[in-house]
Length: 456
Image (tube, rainbow, N blue to C red; front, side, top):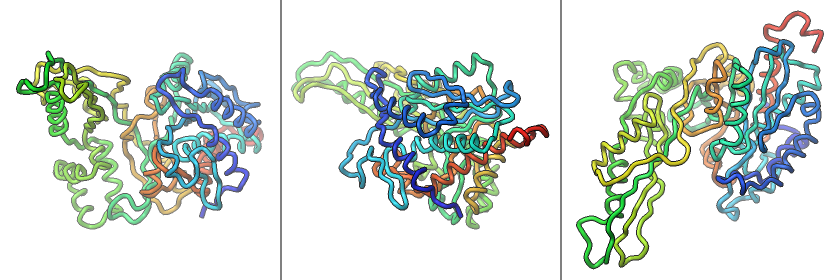
């Protein structure tokens, strides 16, 4: 059983949570002082890291290079992000979201799970390894973005471009995404670790229409607002088709061994029962996202007064794109189901295609083995990240990509991410640090020449 972190370790994370590094859509609105305080805290807390690793900063993002004994080969790029989302209703929190409260069981605050704990855990592990005299055989990069929550354009995108220009190709890219869930997979008693091997794409489509307008006492058959509402309704009522992709088929095959009897039987027929399986999965939003490009109308605007016919109306619909679909096919689907030539369709904001899905090879098995070592008794499976992470910017820079952290979360914990009362248990934080420490020890020892032991 994992022991919880001590007070000093918990306090280092808590101090980072007190730096309100909230993401902003406009970089000019960023609270630079908060990032500067976090920078000072990291330098003071991890002196060996900042003395022995090379650090380049891209705005407030941090790219560390830990040269290996054979520096031209890269073992891993370990990602995390320093920024957090706002706390919408601080009065509902047990402790203020940026107070960084530590009690006997938890470390409380915005970013405790998403994602400062990951950045601090990596630094704790590297600092400890340096103190023990460890050095990786192959170079390791740590890349901590500062704007992941607003799509990483100033941080991860620039750091990835720098690595690409340097010709970096790592064995492993490790980022946030999957966790160990307890009591979430229906019928499965043991906790389930989902190691994600890629992520869905992202697109927001704006629908807009322009009409003549006029007095509301003499409306036509349909106003601009009515046409937009009808179009949004059609898109929502006609989602993109269900599909069982290879990565989700692999996920289900791995889960089959711990499923109850009837479901185990159904999953055993996956090759011929694919449509039935996807229909079952589509019954819940959490699992529907694995088998469909999801459709989420999020914004609708139109009109100025109750007695004025609107001249313009628009809506935004957000899509998370399943591998096999594309940004272009999403636009085509919208036009096809709306069937209104007067409505304009255009992409707005950031768009990205679904990522490459890497196979569950030896590097995946390494991550699975380390997860079992810090959380014994878990089931391990694969999956795909339904949201967007910084790792999409690094997609071509590693042979294997894993989105995973070995923290055990229940339904309440998951709801706190971007929600109320975000917190991380001391035991989970200890798991996260130990996992990263064991990963670094693997880089330092596996396949190392006989002289590596002397160097350590």
